[in-house]
Image 1 (cartoon, one colour):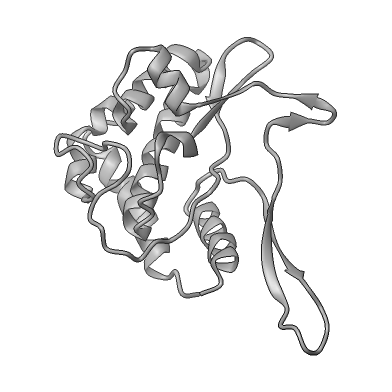
Image 2 (cartoon, one colour; image 1 turned 135 degrees about the vertical axis):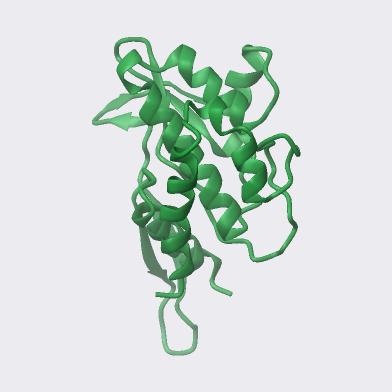
Length: 189
């Protein structure tokens, strides 16, 4: 398996699901007739704005600092406190969409160090673009971070059990799940 190509394709699939992702590009490495050309994936840095560095903090650090459990619903609640008022709803929905995507593609490497917050000029924080998202296909049936009432159990029912923590109304969460599921069903394309 060409893991870098799978990562690039998975990131593009995430983008098609309405997830803000870091820009990626597949790059051939190596050359020559005797050596097979390999592929690497280049990921554009999202913690830079021109020459300036943006302060980035992992969800691991942010949740620990807040004394919270390392799980998606707690990260969604943290966003209520650190995101600009006008962005809270979209940020929480974005996190829910990412969680659902990770469940559907079997990305079980979705631990709290693979999520980050970027400090904005006004002192608030927003989710960084998604990064290090790779389809797993291992069938482990759990996520690295807790997702709902059943802890890390990798089911959509478990994701729905805590949808309110993401600021979602009862009827909104299934719509997001359906949108992502339709795109993921066509992942081969």
